[in-house]
Every structure is written in structure tokens, then in C-alpha cells.
Length: 277
Image (cartoon, rainbow, N blue to C red; front, side):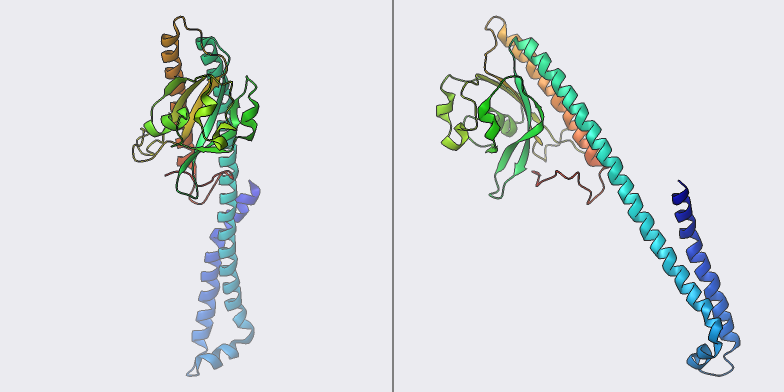
């Protein structure tokens, strides 16, 4: 606090001191002209030129202090933004745990959940990439360990359809669903998986906080498991879980939007990559 006050005072004093010292020097110069050239008069002032030097140093010091102040403000903003991002991240992780538990209880089967970010590839295609942290893994699925990314237009991928159609989807997977995928995709998807519930996380308009149809989703929230829900009364329970997923996806949209609104141009959170826009 003391350091900030001193720097603020220095920012104000620098220009004032410059004006005072320059005014004194100009007055001395004017009084000593006596028809001589400006150069000869300046040389003749000798030690009195220290007023000019003091003015220049005051101006330079004020400018340095101003730039240093701006740099410190930028650092403080970045630190505050990073803290906000971390807290929002923890909030999302806790909420995802609760929603996953809620969906598991509603469907009466254990499930995993994960957020997949939408990223633009070098080939111009949109890919869904795993968020390694924003995930709840209750069911072991070894094939997921080597998951890299999958294009949203890959056939038979429920999360890709949810992204493209911008709507929550539920689908039961056939026993031999691995045979439906290309080999490079099949090796990343657990063969024992039997169902998928996917919901897109839509982008929001910063000014209205409403879904922005001009921008694609930020990603897809996916719940999935190896044991299908019991058939008795399943459809109403699936419909309820689709609503749960949609509500949580809306909360994610609001949080992401808030982080975007509080971010200054050129400030990143250190994990940004080329996002779809």
C-alpha cells in the first residue's frame, strides 16, 4: 500500500517538477539573451542549465513511474484473474461431481463424466479434446487413457452430433459399437461402453448473456457408462437427466462468459489454444 502511494505521488510530482524547472530555465534564458544567439546564451548559463537537466530528469522519472505503474496494474490484474479462474474451475469440478452423482442415481447406474473442449485443427476441422481435469471417473475405461481428439463430424460419435445439432442427446450403444468406428477412433473408445448422454456447452453473447447463435459451442459435456440403465421407467429418467445436463451446461456457459468479460485483451489464462469462433 505504501509503495503504491509513493508511486502514485511520483506520477503526479514528475510533470509538475518538469514544468517548474523548465519555467525557471526559460526565464533565465530569456533574461540573458541580450541579442546573442540561443546557443551562446545557453552555453553562458553554465550551472544554471542544471534547471533544464533537472526538468528533463523529472519528466523522464515521471514517465518511467507511469509505465511502471501500468506494469504493476497489469500484473495485479493477471494475478486476480488467475485466482478467479482457479476458483471458478474448482466450482465447476465440484458441480460436475454433484451432477454426475445425481445422474448416476437417476439412471440407477454408475457413470463417468467429462468435458470435451472444441478446438479448431490445422486442417480446418473442429475437434473435441478431453479436458483432463474437468472429469469424474467412476468406471475404469483403459482405452480413454490414450484419447487424443475426435472430429465432430466423425460418424457414430454422439458427442459430435450433440455439438453439431446444438442439443442434448442420449443414445444406447450396441454391443459391437467399436466396429462402427475407424481404427484410430475405435482404439480410443472403451468397447464396454453402453450408453452416452451428451450436451453442448453453448457460447453466450457478452452483452445479453443469451445463447449466441453466431458462434459454435465451446465444447460438449458427456456422461457415459458401461452398464445400461434398467429398462423399467427408463425414458422418463433419461429425460430428467437430459434436463440436469442442460442446466449444468448453462451454468458452465455463464461461468465461461464471465471469465471472458473480465479478461483484458492480450491476457490469457495460460491454457488457451485456438478456439472455434
